[in-house]
Image (tube, rainbow, N blue to C red; front, side):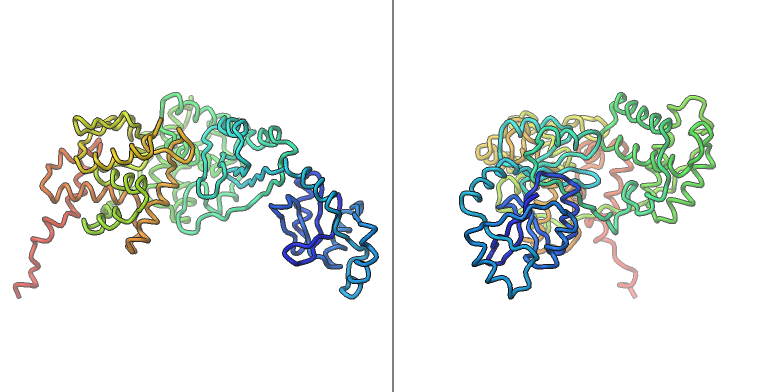
Length: 475
């Protein structure tokens, strides 16, 4: 480790150079005022006696790099500034050039959080191909970094591949959301004991069983999280000892005190019923696990004027086309980003939606107006694999980026409602109903399995409600 006096933005600082070591990085961070310089590819601390003494205390063997020719003049100028015990002098241009060359290859920045690993790196085709070998990797076009799930040996693989090219590995702690309570983000989850090896193996087997049965990724993820928390709650009971009373206890002692909604409770019940069906000799009678009473929430609907304002807001053709297509065809966001160019049959004015929710395909009509917009978009962007691709060719547009597009449109249109992408789908169905479209057709267009799901739109249509006169008017 070497310490050198430098001037950074007209401020004297102490530059600290060392071979990357996560422990040393954490120790450097304890020094007040310590900062990482992207341009220097090095840490630097304040040029004060306190900071220097703290550095010496943490690293007694630190080498002080001194330029003898400038030392005498520098010594005279810094004595009155209460300097460190040893004077640090800016190295010669030759030394700086050598150091710059030494650190040019260490441009990889890795940030590790509980759920994901972000990687910032210079553009290099070989490195990009390596990064793409990770499952569920995605490119963050706003922050110019790769996002990789933090599980298994992903972090070790990154360390082994980039090796001494890594400039820094930073660990951040992201606090859980304050409003939305989910299975894996409750602050009290950490109070539950960890699963033992045998139980962990059963959960892994359950996940593989769901994958074999071709459950959707979101269902596998939510069921896996739900059953893990339930099994941690009932410890030290073994799986073979769990019965229906344990599920009742889980609801009353864990879910209700944490104010988890009926939908989350229903999800936990579904996960438990499915899990214990796969367990031989289980004491749980899955048919007797009671579900919570269903919530009867009305869908959120926008007026036609509000929808028009949102769809006019984006200046970017791709953004405007994506939002317009969601409303024009009543699409779910996953259905939009999974579209391929060949799914659009412009001659027959049809949009073919494959493998949607519930593993169902469906066909919806598309108007001349939206077809013209899609043609303009296709001529401009020339998508290869997906209809809407991310920054990299052949990369699917991310749900997070799509939500950001809507957020920007809401800001420009000055609509203050907490609108989500699904509101556009709700508005599509409601506006069809108000225009006189038969409810059974709407059910087919939305891909609803049960007609009762579609009937909820009859409660929010203005066409019927506005005709009803209040008895107050007749007084």
